[in-house]
Image 1 (tube, rainbow, N blue to C red):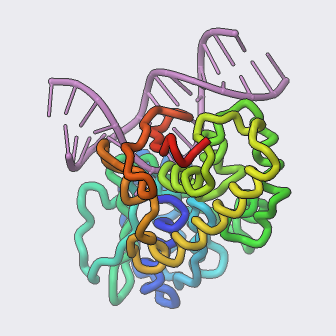
Image 2 (cartoon, rainbow, N blue to C red):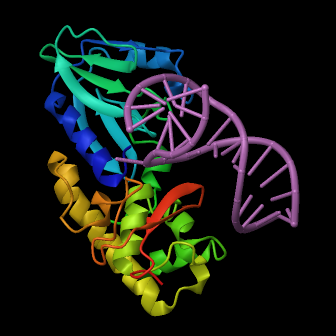
Image 3 (cartoon, rainbow, N blue to C red):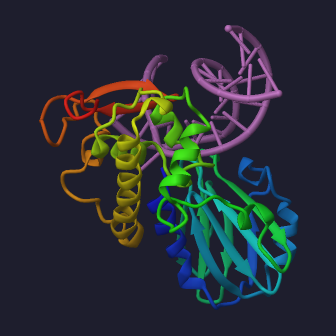
Length: 264
DNA sequence: GTAAATGTTCGGGC
DNA sequence: AGCCCGAACATTTA
């Protein structure tokens, strides 16, 4: 489920526990979400430390504990963060539970495409420090967008927008929304866009990202009326502008919806 | 019962 | 070598 704004929303759920000590930790250590982590290291390192701070970047989240401990969490397709009362009993899909005196911070993920990693050090892991700019950040310039597209010249523009190295946080619904609002057909090779189209795509990528963060990211409110978002999930979806049925095909390995009249 | 799901990674083919 | 596509991962829901 989670893209840029949903990830930010879930990060905020755990903020209820910031500044408070972690008393104990429970994990489903053999589950796939720990494939990049040593679960026993989490079990021995986090208890006793204060949950200090958190930040999201694209689809990744970083959490700081104690003096030198960090968790990075990716929510995959079905991951969520939520808060439960103290004494909560983790369910089948609640793979990580951080117990505090007042509450339990829970990570759940039925499909287990998400992942958790542990890092010890004064600084976050190198890959976090060196991450490329996300579309909601100042570093996401027209030049950065152009370079990202030029690295994948033959790839359908829809597939290019899904690459996290170039567009951290963009996922399937955001890519469809951006292409629809920018008036660009999803199957066009990335290198075939004109300079004016790349500029329009850049501006739309930024505005959709910022608007989604202000609605979904803050409170999980629906994005603005008139967005493709409200139509693209159902097989009978219609273009919000033309009220004609949306086209539907697999592009970049993902279900893609677009309007033949809007997008060229 | 079958298909599809807001994501990433890997292996094979060109 | 590099790029691109499809399969795989695990589970629920329509």
